Length: 429
Image (cartoon, rainbow, N blue to C red; front, side, top):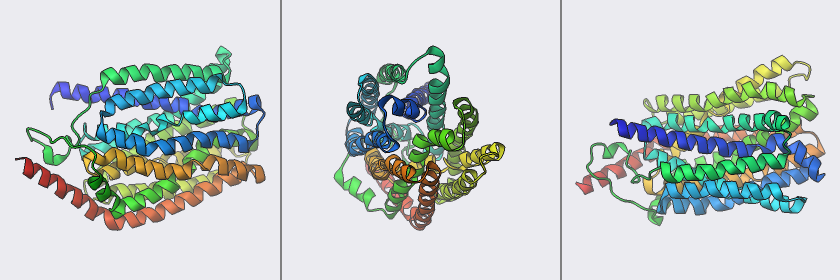
């Protein structure tokens, strides 16, 4: 590989990492800021759950549209637009002064949350299939690190600078605008499918765009059916923990704000490492068997559920034990994330990858959009312990079952893609 190509790849990964990191800071800030926002608007947990659910619902609606556009037009330019929308809508949510407009403007921030399928699809054209898991793992480090960055900004930097929550959102909105400029000028779009092994050494890569026939071919694959189902269940725990765990630690386990940061900072750093570990293990296992990524994913959801169960049932006084068990939970929770993205691309034609992943995210968010609201309702009726525990355990158990079904079909569906790519290369010679 030439030095210029290597540098181009590194630059794209750096820009996309910064985009995802700062976007996650902005998106996940609302977790640690939830107590301040609830106090400001004088609202209940159910009403706050509606705020959180609104953005997820808007993101859900926009996923298919973004996916189609990414497979038809320049992914780099669309990602730049998504970043600009992120900055603008965050500003709007910061300037409103009453509850109903806040629900509406905060919901509008979900428009750009649908941007990631195009980002992952473009990365798939920069890196070979055996490298993608690690690259996706590196990029997905940005999610927990963004969560940690949001915590530090909300609980340390903002109080030190005497910023209220509105000022924090104005600052993160500026990040979105700056990143839109960086993506527009720093990221180059590539021919779809360029990094597929069949094209190695080929003088030219065919120009393919979205087609309904190719998309329907993907939808018919049994592997995708169960990937969709696990996605629907799998994001329930993430959204419940993201939006309610800070409140749970403060109200039900007696942690002060400073204690929350001391507990969660190392847990989130370990969680970040779990993304790369999952991608690394998935790529390694994939070299030996097409089932490798799914086996790693199944191990992750089971062990994550086990350790979370024991953590939440640890007596409140035993903070050391609780911390250790949360660290163990954090190692295994993210193992499946980079492997699911890689698996979708392992069985999907390059020209419909954004759309296929957008449909997956659409189905995920149908469930995820209701998770904060359901958790708020359960918490008002019982407590946050009950809401977090049973939503997470039930969802991960379902994911494990769906992964078992994927194992029966994955080999055939991967062979189908490789055969199609080989026939394209042969036809172009």
